[in-house]
Amino acid sequence: MGPVATGDSEYVRKALRIAGIISLYWVVSISMVFANKHLVGGEKSEVDMILFIACYQCCIVVAMICLVTWFSRWMGWRRRTELISSRLLHRNIIILSLTFVGGLLFNSLMLKHIGVAFYQVARSSTLIFVVILSHFLLGTFINIQIAMCCSVVVMGYYLGASQEGIIGDHVPLRGICYGLAASLIIALGGTFMKKSEDIMNKDSLRLTFSYNFNSVFILLSLLLSTGQFRTVFRSEKMYDPWFWLVLTCSGILSLLIGVVSALQIQVTSPTTHHISISAKSVTQTVMAVLYFNQTKTFLWWLGNFLTIFGTVSYAMVKMRSEKCKQKLDLEVRPPSKYQKDLQ
Image 1 (spheres, rainbow, N blue to C red):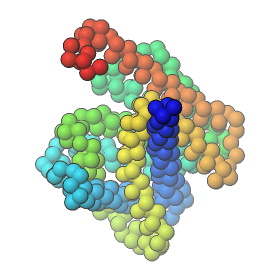
Image 2: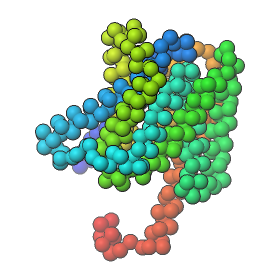
Image 3: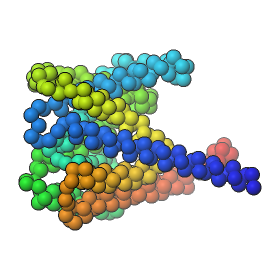
Image 4: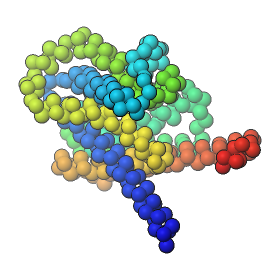
């Protein structure tokens, strides 16, 4: 009776831990989207603060990483790590920083011109660009199953975009273009993220610090060259405590999203992570429709469903492909006696 009870309590504890991390991911991710939408405003916003918002968020991330690193050293939890090094100017780190800035800016511009309810559909094109770039840059083979998943996503994207135009006063063409640009740059940045991990010895904290640190200077140069600094500091929002609170929270959330994403993958699996993202997107869309008191057509909801279904199907196809590849590798190269002993 005792061992069974112990096993049951261990199972419950593990299930609660997984549920807690998934819930935390949902809260952080949804809060970040709504916070950014509040900050960038809508198409008719009087003051354009996108560069300033992005720069401030990067500054918060850099400050938080410095604080966490210092505290962990003081507590003896982490070995001494030099965050600032000559590797900040490595070619791949610079390119990663530029793609990160581009993704931030175009994502904010997209949010400025579309509603939160359409955000999931607008960003679904990232999957298409990931598949295309992987094929041309990494030589990845596109099989019929992956092509079908991408086709479903494209159908959902087209359906959602067309219905968004029918419901509103005009088709959000600029928002769609910004969303496509953000998706392309983010997909491209993912390629350089993998290459940059080796440069930073697979230290995710140093890597996050590096591209955010570089991004601060890139965004500062853009702020000064465009004259947005003067516009921002003449705005009434500079004297609004609520604006600064939301802005600071958005910076903290932008750091936390990477941490909780890694935790979610660690306690579940990459496929479950993708399914969680899709389920979160549904919840986020429903919340946005209810919060902004919007009315959507059946075809609009169908478009959302197709993009999510295509994304989840792609994740499952990739999972099966990876399992088959691992099985084939084991058949070609059987495990050694030492590896068998470990198993």
